[in-house]
Length: 439
Image (tube, rainbow, N blue to C red; front, side, top):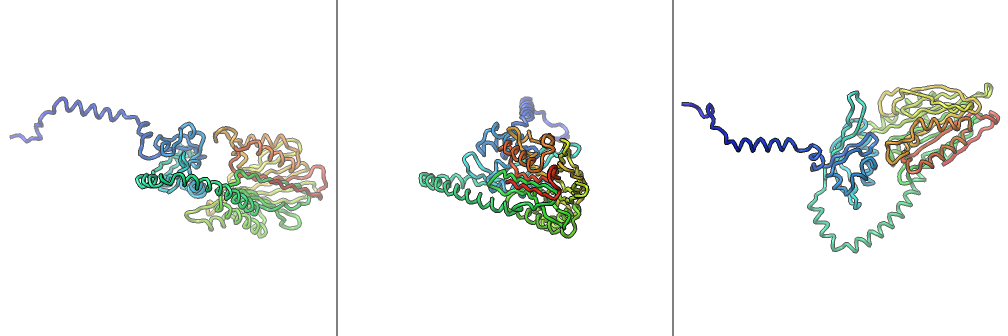
């Protein structure tokens, strides 16, 4: 007697062919179609946030067209004002440090100015050699669609009244925005010195460019005496925008001033700031900055100014010489200030002779857009060429030229920019200081 499993009954010929055909059809489904029609939103961005790819699901949620988004907007541009602030001050810094972040609640804005609550997860994708290439983000709709539709039905009868109230609210919002901008401008000025002190034997000039009147910037600078012969200066950029960045900026300026009076060595000053920031902001809300700290020591006997400086993750200073040349003053290897408990800061020394100018700047200038999107930036090479063209000019003329450049770049400058120039006078007495302070 045979068991059933030893001699199974043959399948019907038609059933097997039908199953194979269905399986083949499933295999032929386009992966791109699955991506576009997924029940959640997908997008990929470059490391600066520019959107490189977005699926149809997310475009439909937001009521946007692909051609108006890809290559033209950053992920933060899709968020509400509150969502964008949280993204810049918390989400983006954490993603940069950790490489991935998941389940963060944000709000996105739709084409009709509605708010779409979402849960966002992002991960940085790296090349085979470890270089970050892009950011992949998944967006889940966190709203209760049924409750939302019922609410719309209930509100339909009040549409005319709502429009009237909306117009009043718009006018009130414009007035509130104007008052807010005035308050932010006052607060921004309070984070910077009202003027630079006169330094014997040194010409100075400074300029601060505000990219947006609606948000506080994190750029800072200062110049102050250490003793009868030496002067300290610094310039830097705090990570993020808004009130949190303003608090870090205030703490940074106070700490560097105090540290310099205790130990004027540039590396020691940045090391102290690193310890303060790391200890203060350890935990879920890390805060850090880039900074250059230096010490000036005019030497009237030798008709020069000795400059010792150290850098923590900041763009290198530029030195424009009286002979018409200019070059970077590299400080490679300097870590971000406050990011690590024990950080290394690079230092260097140079001399400014009559007609030479030292220029410090923040990256709002070099990262200014020169095209329709962030694939075309002004860049370090262009800045070096510009400074070379103005080499030999005193600090005030140099800063005025750079201020004009920022104005020409217009809306392409989407980050605040601080400029500080220090020079050895070419045609004045070593004891006749000159200071320019532009905003």
